[in-house]
Amino acid sequence: MGGRVEEIFVTGDGSAAMESVEEVETVEGCGIKGDRYCEGTGFWVQYGDVCQLTLIEGEHLDEIEEQGLAIKSGQHRRNIVTRGVDLIGLRGKRFRIGEVVLEYDRSRPPCRHVQDLSERGMTRALRNRGGICARVIQAGRIRPQDIIEEA
Image (cartoon, rainbow, N blue to C red):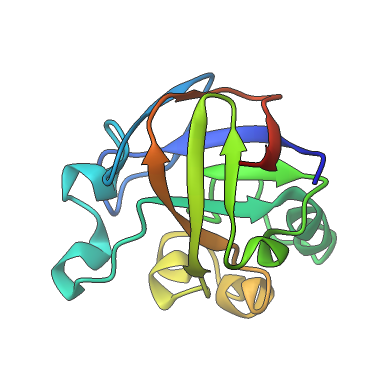
């Protein structure tokens, strides 16, 4: 696998800006402590569409930024930016990031809410590059530069 964590983002509210952080603590069966979906304040909670933790490939963000969209400061609305790992290739697998064991849940297509909070064209730019959702199987901490490997 051989990827790593490049950046981490959280927000306590479904419509608030994502903030870059140096470390997160995860909660088994919930997600990231203090993040909108673990706290029940995410936009999609009302519709029952909750991802415990979201990941997106940094390589995809590079491509989108080349199109002129500002996406690297958390506008993608995903928690973990990775580098060097094919996230869709994790389908059906458990994987470890730092102290945490995660399990692939599903792909996370972009939604209109992301575009509403960022800029026109964001939903289209993220199509087929929206990242994945993962479930927290074993809690712990995640930090930038943590290695991503099969569990």
